[in-house]
Each structure stands twice: as structure tokens, then as C-alpha cells.
Length: 370
Ligand SMILES: Nc1ncnc2c1ncn2[C@@H]1O[C@H](COP(=O)(O)OP(=O)(O)OP(=O)(O)O)[C@@H](O)[C@H]1O
Ligand SMILES: [Mg+2]
Image (cartoon, rainbow, N blue to C red; front, side, top):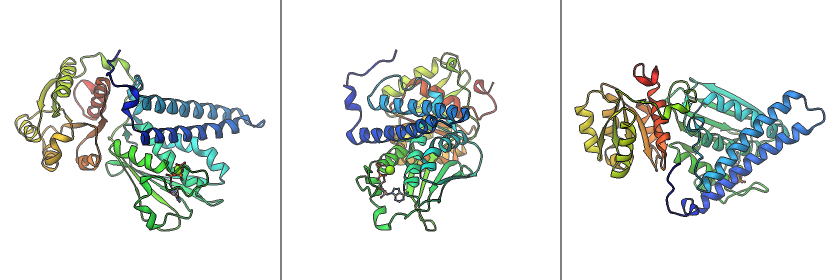
């Protein structure tokens, strides 16, 4: 049982975040209702009913988890690894889930794919954002047109582009589109894009409107990822001396957080060095030839990001980086030259362990790869 803090649950989220969550729960219900309708048809084949049940179950779980998280409820992290998913799995689920809405709008969904099947963290959030973009694209698409999801993982991050053949977005509206409240869609709330943009930023990604050949609107979502295949879910990971022989550096200017992480990792067999400033981290990187991973908070290195990233990229042991921050904007791009994953504060020790397990999983030696 985890400790709860003494704040009332409602103080953890602001109103616009709650509206964003309501919006995405409503999107999940739209998807669910579309599949219920299809499965109810008297002529619905057994395969379609099975597909409907699996989409309904998954989207209902997502909606429940979003709502529970917004309520400040504990336990949403129950299965931390389930939040990590390979890109191709995410894309396949999206295509399946949104196919009913596309059929209703007489729109074809098409995928263009480049690059390896990388794993991304916060997969549920990425799915929420892409659901938003795709539902918008379908809503604004002319009859018999195509919505394209272009997925490129060849450049170290996962890049998703959603394009449609609709009216597009006037350049005068682009600067404010992610601020919310500017719906032109009958029945629209003007909340979806604002929330999608905030969610992408909070997860270390980015969402932008891109200029591309007309006609239509083109949105590009960048999402941090790691190379390699997803680990299987192994709950026992939390209790094993997983990190025996590993050296980790914890760089966090919050003394209590640094101590907590250090204690938790040492209890699992690791050697831990704490660096509370960017300069201290640079010194540690100079002095220690073998470092397996750096747990990196943004604030202590904010002024020295370039030398720190350079030192990480050129370090002889090529340490992995687990970014532990409440404000990850931009770091996904800065850290493109090192193996990295993002963990958003507040996090659980279990999240840290699982994040390290994943980020170290790409190495060829050590306990995690056995
Ligand atoms: N693919 C698109 N093509 C053309 N305009 C778009 C597209 N996507 C978004 N827009 C414009 O941006 C506005 C805001 O989109 P957003 O998703 O935030 O809200 P909405 O779809 O209107 O309502 P809701 O909040 O219920 O999703 C839309 O009303 C529309 O004017
Ligand atoms: Mg919308």
C-alpha cells in the first residue's frame, strides 16, 4: 500500500485538465458506441462481435484509467509495463478502434510506415492524442476521401503525421489552435486539440500543425521512444536484486527525492552516486568510467543541457538516461543522441524500476538482459 499525501484529491488537477480528460473519455465512449452499434446488427458475423468486444474492453479500460487518474486515485500504475507498447501495436489498435467511425463517415484510413518497431512509454497517452487527431480528421473529411497516418520511427523518435483531404486550417488560426475554445465543428467543444497538445508536451513529445501540400490539415506528433522490442510483463521484477553490478547516477536537486531513489535502487543491488547539480553530474561523468544509467531531473541541468548531453553521448560506457521530471518539454529532442526514456513526476518506485529495466534492456550484458 502506497502512502497518500494529505492534499484533497481535487487539488492535484486543474479545471482545464479535467475538461481535457472528460473530452478524451467522451472520445473513448464515441469509439465504444460505434462498435456496440456494429455488433448489434443482426447480420454481424462472429469475428466482428469479437473485435467489438476487444475494442470496447480496451477503450473502456483506458477511459476508466483516465478518469481515475484525474480523480487523483491511487493504483492507476498497477501495471506499469502495460503503458509501454510497441508502435506497431498502437497503430494496429487505433486503426481497428477507429474503423467504425471511418466507415460511418465514408472515409478510408491508410497507414504509411517507415523505421523499426520501437517501444514508447506512456502508450495510453499517445493513443489518446492520436485518437483526437484521427477523429478530427475523419470529422473534417469529405465523403470518399482518405485519412493517412504516417508513422516514421527511423530518426530516433516516433513521428506520427495525421493528414486528411478536408478544408485544412487557415494560417491565421494556427497560432491559437492549441489554446482551445475555437471550435468550428457542429457540436464541437474546442477542447480536444488543447488537451492533446498539453498531454504530448507533458510526456516529452510535441504536437504541431505542419505545412504540407494542400488540400487538408496535417498534424505532426513527435513522441519519445527507445529502440528495441517491449519486455514481457513480469511483476516479479519489483522484488528481485535486479540491478546487482549496475552503477547509477541520480541527478536531482530535490534532496528527498534523490535519497528515496538512491535507497530504492541500492535495495535492489545497485551502486548509486548522487549529483545534485549539473556541474556535479559533469564531474561524476568525468570520474566514473562505468555508469549504466543516469536518472536525470531537468531542473539541475537546465542551464547546462548541452554539455551534459554531450558528456552523456561521449561517455565510454554510453549510459542510458531515465528523465524524471515534471516538465519534460523539449528534452525528448535534446536527448535524441542517447538512449533515454521519460518518467513524469509524480512517479512510483515501481515506475522507476520498470523504466530502468526497459532502458537497460537494450544492452548486451548485466542482469536485465539475462
Ligand atoms: N483535421 C482538421 N481539419 C480542419 N480543421 C480542424 C481539424 N482538426 C481541428 N480543426 C479545427 O480546430 C478546431 C479545434 O479542434 P478541437 O479538436 O480542439 O475541437 P473540436 O473538434 O471542434 O471539438 P472537441 O473539443 O469536441 O474535439 C476545430 O473545431 C476545427 O476548427
Ligand atoms: Mg476534436
